[in-house]
Image (cartoon, rainbow, N blue to C red; front, side, top):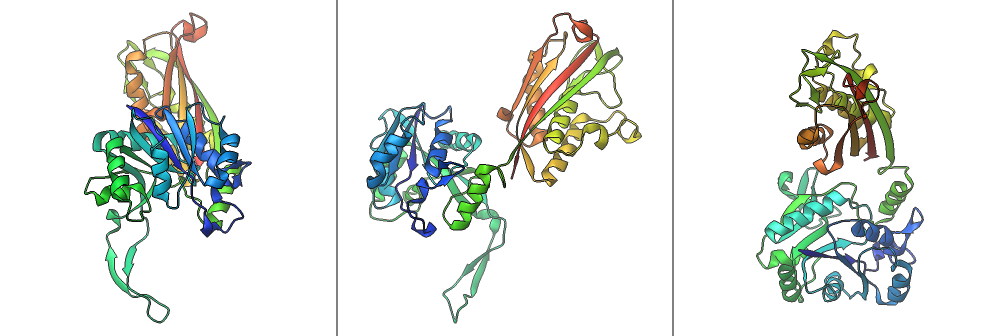
Length: 389
């Protein structure tokens, strides 16, 4: 199914109180709109993009950003209301685009994972939005009385989510919603679809996917863009090597692989987990596997290395980091690892609390060179990317 993205950048951003619409303010040397455009254009799932901007900024924006997308890119004049801007952009999408993804220009930190989840859900259900659960207790209040407002009731917070974008809709669903909702003011497209009585499904959003609305939001976005706050990126590498021995199981990334030899070691000698553990700890400057789980401690005799990896994850999480992705290369002459790669990726993803697409595992031989090439040992290299949240 062809997918068209609409970037809603037609507003004036009055609440920010800036000298221009907020989407044209710069953070980290690039405009908020440019960052959002690059994030959307970076999705392999999106085939074309239409950007709706204020009419008096149309020519300048098109000239400045025309080369910022490898996908077909169109700029249109926005309207008085958000839904008017979206309708103008929708009219310029290809008729063959069966899926429409709408994203706020003021959300420059959207991730590829959130985009993919939203599209996948809309393919199944017709309409889907990204949203995050509220963390605080939610109160419904009444009208103001003498400078304060009385509480009417406490709302179960497990039923309350904060809507984000992207929001994705099958073409016929969005067309009906825009047409029928012309006489109401909607704060997002999902609201128009809800009014039709059609289901809109929620997928997991991302707390990093902030919308720049207030001066405080702008400060946070600037900190993210220059690496002072959430969004700071750290890279780490890990390496491990163990000799092969008879009478030992061969375990790689928690997967038991049938083979006549296994890796010798104090724990289960899982070189993949050990290398990845060192990579994430190194990225966070949080020590290494030898310091956290020393082989002089009998506690770790025969330990499950997936459990050790989860322990390292708990440590980096406590320091304010999350894993963005890991890339692993296993060097082994035998056995063939290809039949086990997907299971290895799934185990790593579960331990690292990421999607499987964020893990890569590759197998290489050493072409008969040294102990690995002679089938006497195996080694693993790992690279990890962390982000502060």
